[in-house]
Length: 380
Image (tube, rainbow, N blue to C red):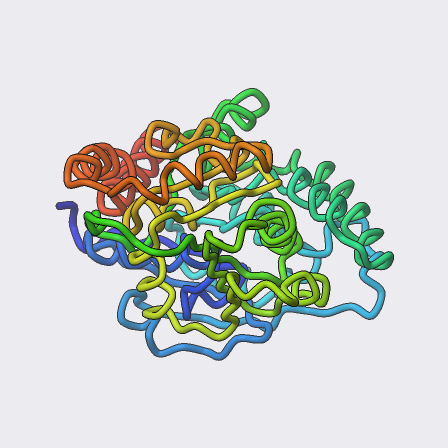
């Protein structure tokens, strides 16, 4: 283990506790894994809608909070809204307190990436998505006219702003496909798998009695996936489906009327959510947004039995051999009928464990991040 004197700054686009949605899950468990390796982290958090958390002080040396700005007119700036609203001068002053490496979480936090007062530092950008693609997909599934227009403009601004990544010392892409994209544009990209809460594979052998889908239902792509399952896949009442997620849309709630074999829970705590993943016979994981990597896929493979997903969920993740693939409603129905009856075995679990322990261990990937930073320091 390296000296405990090693120190980095980590700039988070949100307060990463509770770690209950994709982006902050990666940040929080990265922080925890770095702490476990003796790395001192000064955590900088932009705050909007979440409370300051003492939990973070278990793993960070210091935690600074900055109020995220809001604008009555989200179109006033040439910068992406997610960047322009995170430009607190206090952050820059705190970064200047030493000369240690800085990790910027997402394009969101890159307002100061090329600032002259930190340009001689090691600066790592952790990309969580190809952001302009992500916002373009949000536009496609959004029904509200104002939000749809905002997503389109934001996508265009993010595409332009992405060129700022040329100033990063390193770009840590969250998925193999994102790495392929960024490495074609920027020579300093490398693949750093997603950080997550799972330390060991805990799938239960045997058979469950229901299929399970989970996600933040206020996000357009998750709402679209849930409605796809309700309206097009689970049309046979002999196949029970449980959906878990907060803030379901009116359209989703309306589509559930009269379907007693489908239940929706929108206020599950973390333990209840994990129990539903573990006890399901099949975790169904469609997505219509292919950038990044879905942490629900990683959680389902660590904790659940069979995983039924579409190509957009698993392509270029390295996890294809451990998922049942289906893309059309007919294919989903066919695989459901087959795999609802097939027990998950200890042999299935062992195959997953061998691969996930090697490629998705947060301990291993914290070491990978620090090794990349040390190497960049030597050549800086």
